[in-house]
Length: 157
Length: 411
Ligand SMILES: Cc1ncc(COP(=O)(O)O)c(C=O)c1O
Image 1 (cartoon, helix red, strand yellow):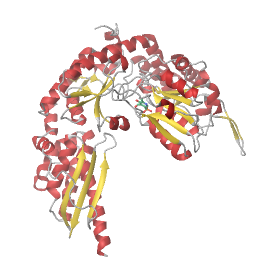
Image 2 (cartoon, helix red, strand yellow):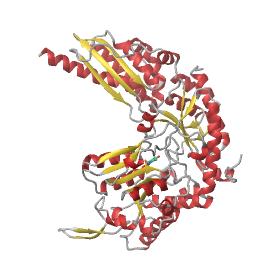
Image 3 (spheres, rainbow over the protein chains, first blue to last red):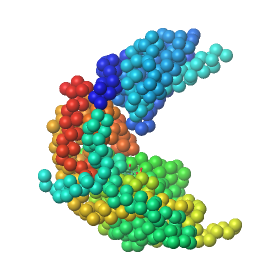
Image 4 (tube, each protein chain N blue to C red):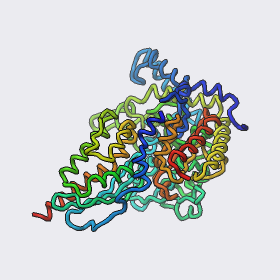
């Protein structure tokens, strides 16, 4: 049972938790192609405010402010590492791959080529109560990205 | 240890779930009773027996089983009336839970622009949101009693808050987050002095204090079945008979009417006025059995036990570096729920590590976000004991917290 716990709290997760990457909101939220969302996990109160800047089909920047548990904090940190600078369609593929891993009840083999550090979250999938923690910032990113896309399209036309 | 229930080991045998082991073969240490209590065998048996032998719909069935079922359901009403020391059994309305009972009141008590409703910052969301909705609907103003740094109600501006336009003063008896025990009789008297109705949320009080509606002298009081060793799916609204009969109906349907024509209907008196449709029959049977079980052990003895365990837990928590307990620090001023923070570890992570050791606690905002905000915290970890909790279980919690600190390498 404590091996399950160690599978949940991988060293990589604890490192990202203690030293989160890209934390702190950056950039001008009102500039073109930028969107900001606020998501909460209503059962525990974890919160994230996440800002996405898209430009020319590329995820230029993602930044966030958040409060929450180690899993939710580390997952936001890993998310930003994975998607910043990537073409949007590739970022979407990463998102989809992570979502499948999280919803796989521990049965899905993680793809390290796509997910890099995020494979450390494979153990989370065995703890249904924590899957929402891991997905909080990823869902916020998807939402903000859709809004930023709409914003870009709006200003282009 | 003084104050513990003398038959603690026997009482534990009443609760089959306490024998359970969890993943890895660790024994269950259940410290989440403020969330829901465990159920003694008598309650389980009473419900199984009802379903196996007496099941039928009530009131409308003209056969022997129907009569037996009706009798069992109405006997539960008597048991609850006795539990509350209610002057009349007609004052006991069965609802789905405490939340529904509070919403029933917030929906049926008439409010309008210029009126106000006074609640407190330590309410459970069910006693906040229902009144927020009522105020939004009616244009009435919602006012709040604040909290002191010690986690007690700040009564210093009571006379400004409650005035001649106050229609309702609604407050919890025992806080589910801070553990604070409020001066309910004083609050009920304050409401009455201004012509307002008092609504007591006894969800956390009913499990561990003697609830006597005549002594509190309030107008309405609610509690929920599953926290008093009863099943889920049933709660209680108690109200003064006359007041209940003055309120308009809540839900329309079968059982709550006197007569129905195509032009109009007239309504039954309380309690049936508020029990539209087939009620939670077997749940009522279980609840009646549960409150009898508690009365048999004695609410005063249970309260003493809770205080002894709470004092022991407060002491134990102090030995863990970085623990900050919210709410009153003296066991005599609080109930058996203790919310705390542990420096450097998020409540979710605490609960997860404790769970791997079989210790079940709650992590989050415990449906009391305003009270958390008042103390500048977003979430907390809560341990809550009950009549079956042993000092050894508190030791397991405290050891678990020491282990949590080392697991997350804090300190
Ligand atoms: C103080 C208080 N009031 C109300 C409730 C609501 O109870 P229920 O969810 O059973 O309606 C609870 C339980 O969570 C509570 O602790």
